[in-house]
Amino acid sequence: MTSKRPNATAQELLAEWRVAERMGNTARSAAEVAGLAVDTADVARDAAGQAELAVAEVAAAVDRAKEASDLASTAAAEASTAAQLIYAEASDDKARTREVVREAEADEADAAGAFRDAQARGFSKSDG
Image 1 (cartoon, helix red, strand yellow):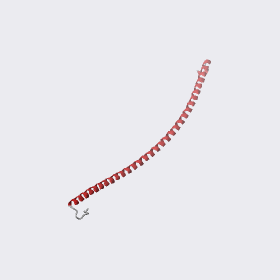
Image 2 (cartoon, one colour):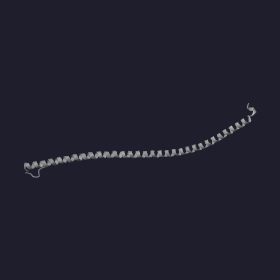
Image 3 (cartoon, helix red, strand yellow):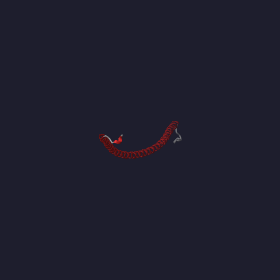
Image 4 (cartoon, rainbow, N blue to C red):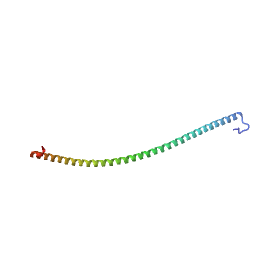
């Protein structure tokens, strides 16, 4: 910066120099702040990119969890159906077993009755 007045005094030139020096310091400070702002914006951009990747990964994990939940729900429904079928078959087996026990008890009673009748008659001669 040159003096606007060609015949400026030393005091005026010194004052202009000081003003110019302050303006230079202010400009350098502003440039430093602008550089820091650019650095901050760059870090913020990187952070936003990382956040975007994290959100995408979380979304994928949620999708996988939903698929796993659906599979577990299907498996539970199939297990319930299988349990109902097993229960029905077991109930039928229990009923059939009761019938077999009744028949065995009836056969046992008939055999005991036949033995007692034969005993009362003195058994047949071929028994020895």
